[in-house]
Image (cartoon, helix red, strand yellow):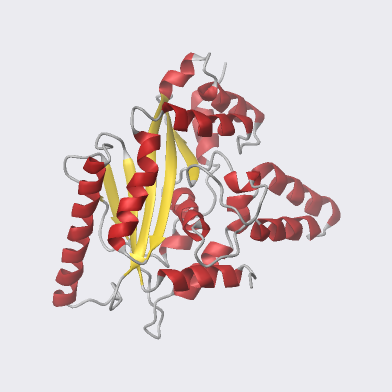
Length: 312
């Protein structure tokens, strides 16, 4: 007899890292806000500033690059590399995986994979929702992006419901284009008519589940077996990252009243845009977590991440 409480605990422990390790560089402007007449929650974050008054773009890029192996490499390979280190005292296997992870990224400053990496960090470290499948590990061509959603994560509750989160990230210069394209991309996975899209991703999860504990993996796979009644307890959700350029970039730790009100008005406009897009793409009743992250320069962050990975 499976102990559900132990299974839930094991699943939660799959999430890697702590929220502080990323949120220190991306502090929240305000508490999460529920968009009226929808099931969407928006969290707005800005880059922190260093003691010299500059946005911490390089520090965020470093935090992102350091998570490349967690994002790209299945847990089974990482565990084997650690076992090799314990046996031989050599880090060769670990370094090899790190190199493999970096080589999986498209070496282009216009690539969207930087956004996928940041979304992964926010899901695992802030929302504590573990990755179900490492899609990057399935790439056969490092110059081509992975098809489908930008990530698949999940949470498992004591009531036995498995919440699956399809991810979508957009880092654009324009906020309006970023919000529009984000919902246009993720809506097909979330609407009632999206069974074919979901099934394609869930088959990948079934065949490449990123879980090494045998009992936990066996339990989770029951949710993806269409002959098992546990499939009735799978709920689909969305998680989005929308980043865009923002002029006169503020230090939110040091705002006077005028600046505070100015940013609040801008955040309100972004919330209104999100509400409009949720309704336009007919996902009003679906649970969606959206990270809204204005940036000093999206292209600059992409370039810094690639540089920290050693890409030329």
